[in-house]
Image (cartoon, rainbow, N blue to C red; front, side):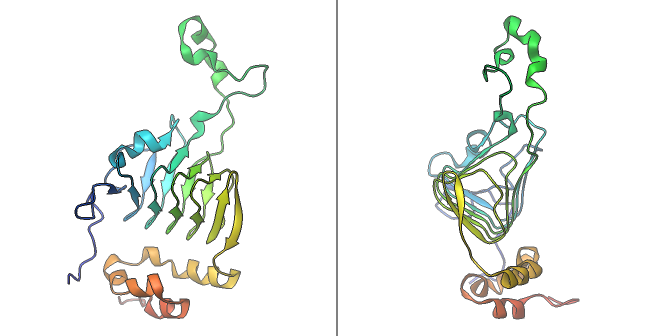
Length: 217
């Protein structure tokens, strides 16, 4: 049994499973930031994540995904470029099609902007989930399959539906505060490796006991 953590720079980390890709070594856009070990699972288009799953990304808003996030097949992020004007009789973006209509390109400026889309650490996004522009999803959150996330999700919240609604919170406020203080996703990978079973099947007391000590490991 190896004692070394996986390499976060390896595109396909699972032997014989090209459908699983780590996103950090895959993405090339300077507007997309992904933390170590976050992965996307897709049986057909895993390596096309930027083109197929991050849509209308004309900038300058960023997509930020934290560490240790699990993205199932078909998770999509709709970015701010999807917006249309809604203050006139028509929402059609005439200047986008060129010709004489391009003279009115100024009509495509000043569209509503919600800012960066941010996914925290240790977030699980279920099959076919859609995240709308400017949404912030908290650490430890779960988004159910097929959900359309139109508003922010709290830390350790579980949301589902279209539009997604808060179903429950995985821990009470005091325990959420403990988890955020532990911030295990910032632990050195070598230290975390020794405590994978505690992270996946332990309790908060055990996790706190496993935390790196100041000046040590």
